[in-house]
Image (cartoon, rainbow, N blue to C red; front, side, top):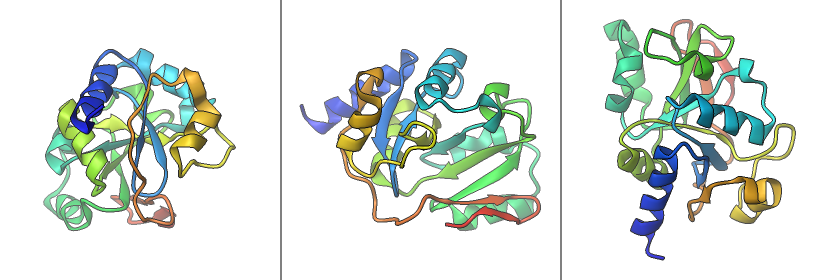
Length: 186
């Protein structure tokens, strides 16, 4: 199947509330529509992840995150502009546009604008950000090959978008936008 059809299949699955595995900068990601509570719940069940932990959202551009950035200072926006696209996930104060089931128990939402070609294409074709969580069962190693995704999640997945992970050796760095504190080294 040509890649454009595979991409469209992934987008169709996302729009229908399904869960898709896709390659990211360092590992395979698991994604869904971040505004569909049932899709997010299903993704959390597949991963056996505590909903209180919250989830990362990934986008193709800062513009796709605009509603979530409402109320940020010019200085904080400049920080995001300097680091995105790139391997930086920022914890941004959650506003009224952030679904509670995305932020979990936190008062912030984790956002990243990816530089990975396939992530960018997926978010552009979907028309907005998608959930980005490693495509593994909690406590298991994060997969770097499609076969590892299949081994862990198998038929529970709605679709696996073919591709290759990037050359990053670690998941993205996580920083708090307001305090500048690094919560996970990149």
